[in-house]
Length: 307
Image 1: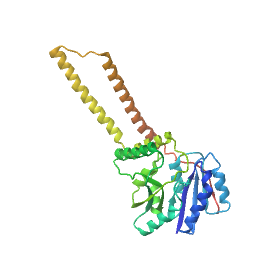
Image 2: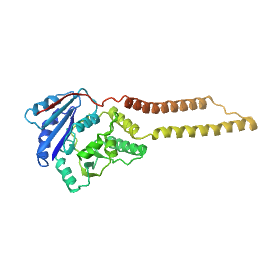
Image 3: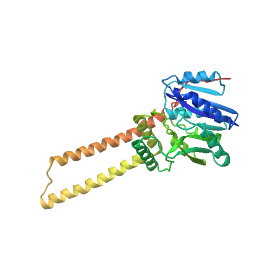
Image 4: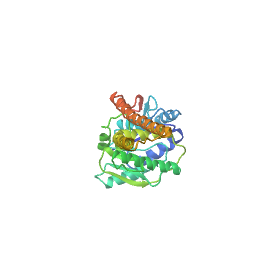
């Protein structure tokens, strides 16, 4: 049995040595035939140099150097693509989730032969109250708009069988939301409660989080387009009712509503609504445009592997 450990590098220099030591130590308790794949996602620090130096003394290390920063999810899918193990352990290098979880996950998988994935479920989201509240709100929005029941507060770390990874790699969209793909791939997936440690500031800025939320909604739901149609229908119906009301008052009571302010407010409201709806449609069109070009989601500069 061969085991693949897949992780990514982005501003990861302070954690690499400890991660490597703990991950490989845990792997020995699962399989003697192990590879650990580092995907360098255009890290601006010396993460690549550190891993290449470690590789000189450990032939188990494989380094995939991307040509630039493509994003965490795309780097992960690239690492999975080049993994070869019968089981694949996916985890971030920043030690917020313990590499020793490999042993626990594998034990659960061994005791449940019909399962293909074991992942962690966070007992409590990290960060302050705003980060926790916004995170839960984002998951609820995604689930509502997609009509799916994707797990909330799942952790990134997980162990997967080869057949599950193979099915996961069949999804070839360029706009990736990997949490949704994990769910869509199906199979029996088990979760166990874990605690995530906080090791410092996250590399996910507010802009990246918003972009990921938009991608997740557009990738898994067309409901916003139906909501636009529903809102337009409601506004049209209300306008028809008001039109007949005004005609009735004019014909039978010779009364016309006055007020420049109300007219301007209505114009601004409807104008803003129209621009908003055009923007939503534009987002969908941009995603279709991106997918239609069929470009690779990452470009590999070089693969470092000891023969």
